[in-house]
Image (cartoon, rainbow, N blue to C red; front, side, top):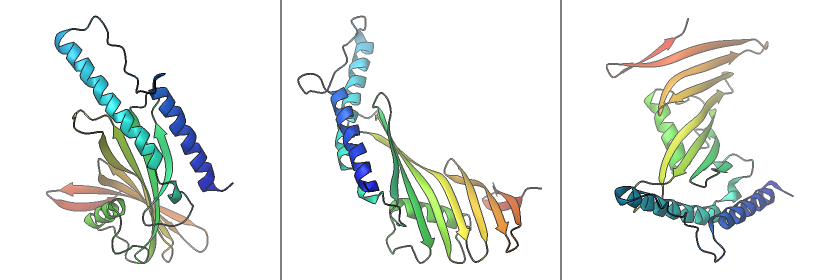
Length: 217
């Protein structure tokens, strides 16, 4: 059984189990029983929370049905491949990890997807776009949770979890640490034909809107 079929079966099991846990005997979404001791504004807040949770769970069921597992094959794609889908135990948040493995610049299409474009823009801001053909690998975490806004089905945040650039011709690899959407530092490993390696740690520091790349002693 190939990877796509295995992933599809796992997805169907996940959807079925989740859908069953969210519905009552009549097939309707479960509503938590309202505590009798609540009154006034607390009662309204509780009812509002239950309504928002129900909206998110309905969106989650519909979303799990259409997740594109056709992009799970292990091949280089500028649109990324889904590596992991995690639903919390209470079904009130969803995490999707999408992995990217592209060759720069020849593997970049004229219209890259938003995640790839975001990473390339971040590297460009720090003067870190490769100057020669290199492989760029990174993971994007898409996090969905219940929205405090009644009109919205969910809140979403995007985070770059891993970023690695490998330059084959120069035999170097640079691993970046990202904090709050900004590059914090990078670890550069220089390899030689003799098998020896040299490691450098470089911090990215902004002072008066000027970027300083400082090597650690």
